Image (cartoon, rainbow, N blue to C red; front, side, top):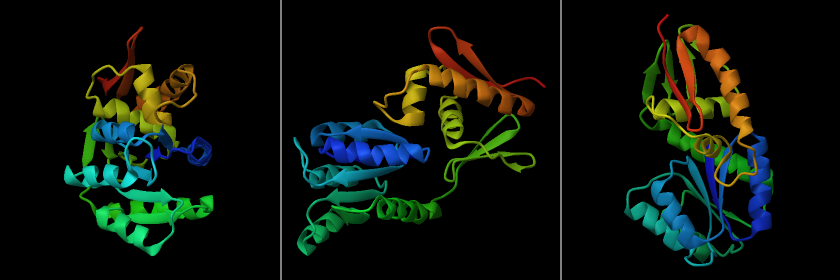
Amino acid sequence: MRIVIVEDNEAVANGIAYVLRDEGHAVDLIFDGCEAAQFLCDDDADIVILDVNLPGQSGMDVLREMRRRGDMRPVLMLTARSALGDKVEGLDAGADDYLAKPFEMSELRARLRALLRRGASAPVQTLALGELRFDTQARQIIGPQGPLELPRREVAMFEALLMAQTRTVSKQILLDKVYGTGADVDEQVVEVYVSRLRGRLKPFNIEIKMQRGLGYSMQASTP
């Protein structure tokens, strides 16, 4: 799962990101409301954790802009305010849930899981490549004998390459898809995941090709 955290308190944001990344999620960190509004226009994250009090532009305004353009991704409002009126304003603006600081990480994780379950009723789209199918809703790779049990980050890399439709994807983009924008992770980690993924996909007639200096592409191979 890819999660965007918009929170101006960097210590709080980094603390949340640390826990979520440790669970295998990709996390994008943004500390400014104007930057968040622009970022959310173009990214493909699954869920947004959005603080109300932000520099540049308030979280409420960021949320309203999302909903006006038809962006219905789940949004969990995160704020120090706990008054009933603030909660009502956030929910009326289109928030899916509301969590007041201070909070326990276990509660935040539970609320994220609940939001994702609500979205599970959306139409399932399945993409095929070689002998595999990919359930975009469940983010699950399915082979002839059933689902493949792959680590989350390998699934995220498979999805990024699959969505590129044989186009070459740079190491940095793959890194962002797996860990989130701005994560302090060396690009060489991509090589490790690609190597593991190649081995897992070979029996299903799928290959990952490298273009030196450019990145990787994935395509079906001839049996």
